[in-house]
Length: 336
Figure 1 (cartoon, rainbow, N blue to C red):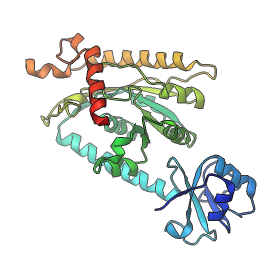
Figure 2: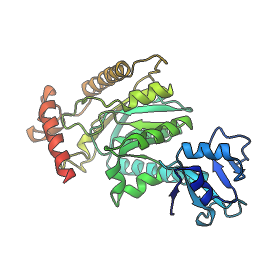
Figure 3: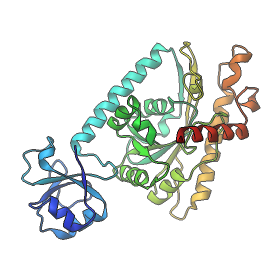
Figure 4: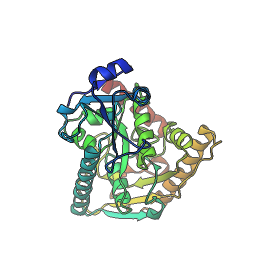
């Protein structure tokens, strides 16, 4: 569907001459389905919409509500705020994808050990911060959240959404694309999801750790937690790198052990320093990771199978310094 972004009030009313339908929270006197029909003369609210960077589309291009008397439907933020109908599709797609992954994990015979699932809130906003060691991390966290009847909207690099296979699925599940050159739209979208009471998933390391150890954290999770005053739930996964991860490592061998540890939520104070809060989050996740590694039941089959263990545990994974060099090389390659 074609979208028009209105940068000022005159442009807005050029597209919306007879009125518009507004969808969102915190609006005055909504109808039962959360929509409000506002006349074009209600200029203060229209100005607010422009300030919030809403996108507008003619009603005729939408099949969602053809019976609305307005001539246009302000249906989402420029960053991707969904309509009611789109939100329902996100939920349906998410359920189907979770079931597909559950079936896949059964077929692979994965022995999943989930501990601390009760720490994921059953309602209300929270940030789910997870380490990143494989391409299936998000699916494992999604499975854990599904047991609490919750959905996690993950922030993921924009290239994942450009992929012809993963892109449609990521968009259909309502995940959040992150442009590394301009992260503000993704931050606004994550903020909006939190204000709607959703769980937002963030990988504070940003990219997969080739050393299988925690890398330096980006500030996004801590910043959102402090600014929005929402709890951050630390999560660690281990063993999933043996299934599918970077540098061509994958295996369909059945029976691998997978560990998911979920820690108690960390609630920031209004006066919390973002750097200090981020350091505290990393310390908590480091403790969880060491616990997961100590309690992991599987051992390498032979010397060639030691690649999935970090160097300090006797594995052949690169050290953090070498891993950082490999990350930089991969980034240069992808930028070409």
